[in-house]
Length: 207
Ligand SMILES: Nc1ncnc2c1ncn2[C@@H]1O[C@H](COP(=O)(O)OP(=O)(O)OP(=O)(O)O)[C@@H](O)[C@H]1O
Ligand SMILES: [Mg+2]
Image (cartoon, rainbow, N blue to C red; front, side, top):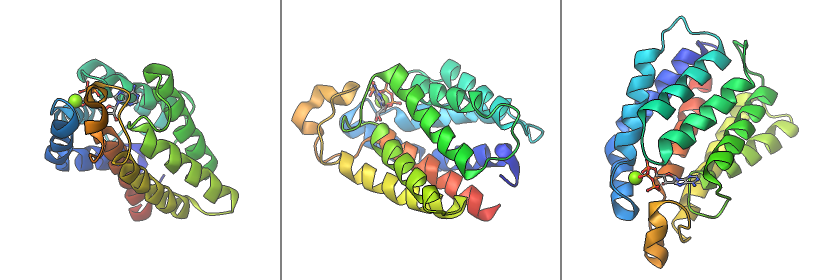
């Protein structure tokens, strides 16, 4: 991870902030109009806590997770917070990630989200973007793809996952109150997950 974990998280924060209104608008349609606000507030707090001297990937991801857990209310703060914390646990002391490490990071993040939120694929949540992305990433590196190539393909799968959320009924979170009326709308959390993965992809490309 050339440029370091600080740069990568700065890029995630930048993209989330740039998409604040878009994410909030998506959440207005099937939720309570706060997803972009929650995520942007969380990442602003994260950037206040981090410094360019943070090079230990595990420690930095843990700090990120703890900040999201403590600063962001709603469902997404604890869910993303747990994802970053779990990713941090398995990358302690590392300053670079191999494709195998990245595979483990994605799997740990998913396990954290599922432990906390008890959702499975197909419930119109962030998992519908992250799980297919992680599966594609693993398949690509098994075929011998490098990090950049595997992330590129993973982002395509995340995008397809976001599109898929338009076709299904929400059964978790506030959107589930809408029942069938949630069909036709893309899930805000799946969208922020896709944006996060795209930022990681672009970080890896540009570094
Ligand atoms: N149990 C869950 N597991 C995984 N993701 C979830 C779960 N519940 C909600 N989400 C995700 O959180 C997103 C909403 O995040 P937001 O920041 O708006 O928090 P919120 O308003 O408290 O959420 P919600 O109203 O869905 O409980 C949803 O779009 C969905 O992707
Ligand atoms: Mg909301």
